[in-house]
Length: 85
Image 1: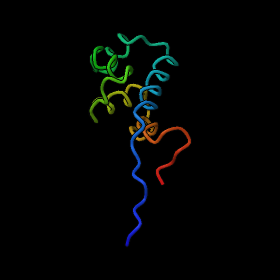
Image 2 (image 1 turned 135 degrees about the horizontal axis):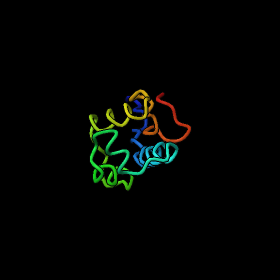
Image 3 (image 1 turned 90 degrees about the vertical axis):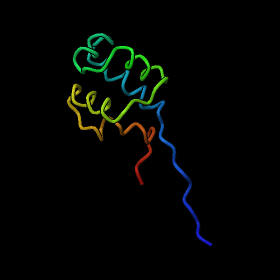
């Protein structure tokens, strides 16, 4: 009998909070972020409100505009204080 490790689930709440923090840190409005990233304002509202998880392409565009690696952008999916292992 094998012992399976507990299944981890992505923490989309942390990811949406992290996006909002990044935007606020730069003092950008949703309109400014939309213009800089090419991601629609409506999509950004949905991401920050938790109504959408977005696509890899969307998160890549956001990472680019914030000048961070996509891995750093998505790291909050592991939740606060959690590591990949």
